[in-house]
Image 1 (cartoon, rainbow, N blue to C red):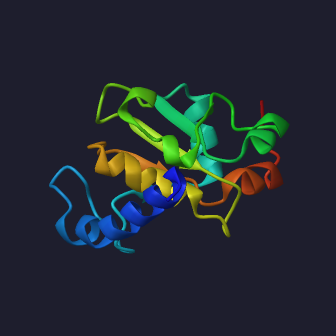
Image 2 (image 1 turned 120 degrees about the vertical axis):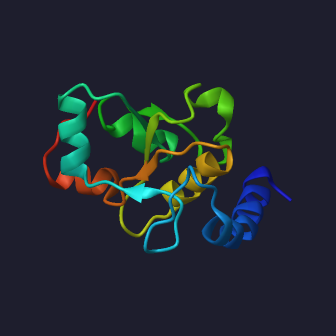
Image 3 (image 1 turned 180 degrees about the vertical axis):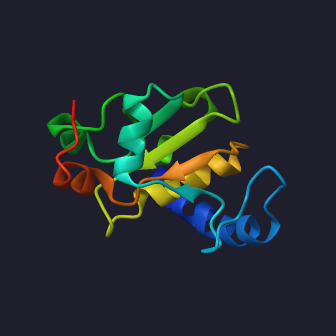
Length: 138
């Protein structure tokens, strides 16, 4: 079984546990997810205000190279690990992928929650939504 397939299998198995038994530090939202959602406009505002936020692009290499949210670090969805994330477990982490029809950011966010991070967000609009709003890219 490939590493990605193993990650997906484990992530799917962990979903009910996360939704039903989230720790007090992880709030489960109305959709049963242990992470929150942020719009592209709100993320852009936080970045412009130099808020302490860590942004992760979980798109493929080529898409990341075409342009990404400013400050975003490229991360493969199956490589979410403590070593690649900030040491502070309460730090604001935002994951995004291609757009509304892609769910890679969901899997990355779930992995971060499973690692004990408590302030995890996704930007469901993805880079397509970001660019559609003509927000700055690197």
